[in-house]
Image 1: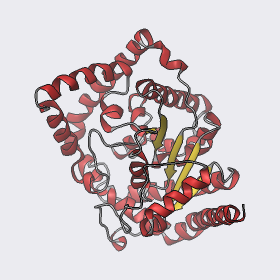
Image 2 (image 1 turned 45 degrees about the horizontal axis):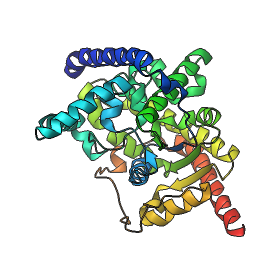
Image 3 (image 1 turned 30 degrees about the horizontal axis):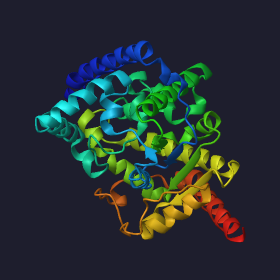
Image 4 (image 1 turned 120 degrees about the horizontal axis):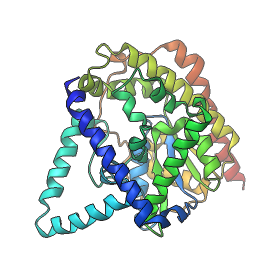
Length: 353
């Protein structure tokens, strides 16, 4: 709670700076609104299913792809801020990078125990849903305010009122346009494990988009997520015993599995590929390359040197974070298995082609 009392005013001040930057963008860089987002690639899926590993592996192909980095998403979502901070970075490098070192230290310190769950670094490819923070529409805010109904609905986008949903989607599209304005000639690579319920809306906005959907066995995925959230619960002191968080994320996961299964079933195999975490862990290069081939994507920088068995530094014991077996069996397992069947059908159809 002390963290919120101290950090929240600073957070609000930072968002005010961002909105000032957006106003300057409209005056100084109005051309960003004309930027076309052509054939973007979205890494979606169930949280804790390998989305970060997949995203950062593909993001290594910097000649083709561009993704938000941590500093761009959190510190400089506006073009104006990026121009100013870009100039400061040049000066900083001439002085031996003292500001960069301080910023990196602050980011890592703020991340705290979350580093073992999701490595944070100022130049690391990051989830661009963080660019929604100025609009109060970033799902991560739910960790600080787990009882906020509007934040909870960000994980169930179709249930938001039409006007609010369109406003959020429009803000997100402009965020992507600003990013591509600063990285011309690149293809957008977006990763958002919190965007499961956004898949259909993103396909409507970007009909030429490609979607890589990561999935994981429900019990393992949900227990890993609850374990990963322990540090945040301690930091914000909003749900000490974790019962509300467990109930909340069980509902979110059930909804995510169902919506993604419907999305995978309706979309053509040439636009959506499913990747199971255990397959990617056992044979990362082959699994990723197969999914890219299905979508007609090339990634020349992808090598066979990816380490099989790669896992995050986060460790947890599922028994310490029990989940409702009824919810798993009735709500999540059928959708999970349906996506795997869809993936198998895609593999068969490609082999016959």
